[in-house]
Image (tube, rainbow, N blue to C red; front, side, top):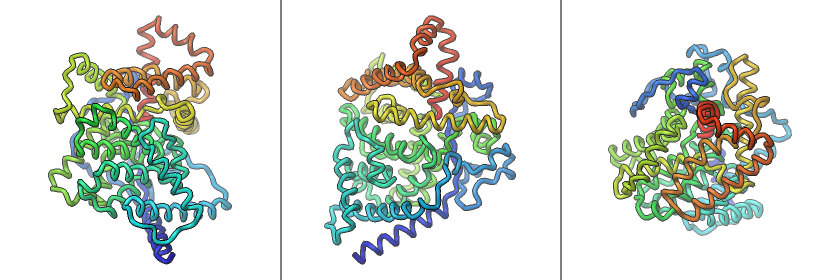
Length: 479
């Protein structure tokens, strides 16, 4: 028991250190399509990002937090975005939270032993063993499309991203193949999880874990499993785990209208995707996870990681979708070609990022409620500070059902229809089936939806200019 106590103390100190060093600012990137940009009256020039770490995108990690006065931002940004979606907690909840954290440390210790195949030295608490056993059983079915990430997060006490990603890296044999240092890997994953803002209803570590699990499902599809290299799989899993790193729970137009320094730094182009990528690379370098690899290999990983994360920018949805459709029409995708494999990985990540409407209703509904809560909360803040309310963020003009129906119609259905053409498998048909059922369920809650949809289809021009642009707004926040 002495060893377990020592490790628990070490983990407590690690968590304390992490809590002291945190303080980065995060925001969601929603580079809009031309239609959406016109709608918002925001100028957005297309600038091809280069792999250069600019001095402005420094990850601030201190208790000082955000200092708007030296960056000339809107006065509202004096509010700490880390607490944007947080709710006040009573003092009585603190002891319970500390107890849960202690269980978490013990689970980290036990799970790392189990993953290494090491024998259990001393039994931990019965409750802790029971939770670990349930989580381990769930991981045996991690490739199931019905995987309940919410339950898994509860069983791992809020550590779903760490447990899931570590398990997948180990399952694919990547830890041994790339000779990753276990301590560095654990530290990297914990820091990644900590840099997600779990006060956000939607853009948090559970969303990242869900996307990572979906990515795993796609990587196991026959076409990909037969052609992807271990390097491709490593990139795919890391990109999924970090694709929304340090997300603030507000979208890009919000950053632009408040003159945030990140918007200026990236010239209003893929602001948050660039920030997610730079943040991920910052953690890779800070933990020296790939220090054992040649410098050119590490740099290649960083570049390709950026290429994958930047592909989640919803403003480039039509660009990627058109290219994908053209490849499928001409039947010229060769997965023996490295660039073609990378493109397929980009499409897989795009699908994983917005796959919530394709999950079973019990899971899909929870995600829909969470993302809409985040939208509406941003809208309430914009009202409070006399800012223009962003599309889909006005709780008085939108409902969960209307938001979801539009998103499914104009963003999700076109993407997954093409993915099913590429990978015509049982999983693809299952996803499309859930998508249709979920859309019907939301339509039943929105009596006017069917009538509005028919009218929109008859007036093609207006349907293209207004609904799709509003829906892409949601997509950019979900990405």
